[in-house]
Length: 170
Image (cartoon, rainbow, N blue to C red; front, side, top):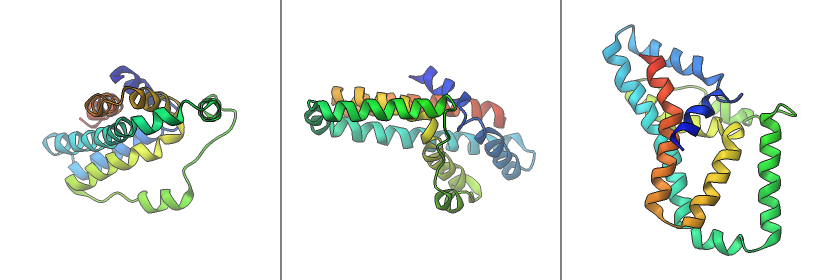
């Protein structure tokens, strides 16, 4: 799951976020590496925590999900959603975050708290491209119905997605 997280950085929706994020770090640090390190680590922590909470929620509601997954119509709908999201990854069409959300969250606040919040929000912005993998992992975690496992799997996914940013920021 960690390696999948790293690989997700090459998807069309996440890739453009790399220069934006690196620009955020460089503008905040004013050229001092020791100021970049905590910003990058809090960014990755925010990203990882966002996904970990999603995994925890899926594991906690596993029984509910499990009951719904016994219905063929729900399985067909989930399969269709995974296919639709993956077709957008192949460039058949483009999914974008609504303009109102990008305007609201497009302005990052400064400092350590801003880096943490930016990491939390990037999970939402990357959703169209990482959706097929995240949805598939959510289904696995909900079937396991083990909250610690769900939390850790999604935390590892977030760490994988965030690790390249630490190196790029430094």
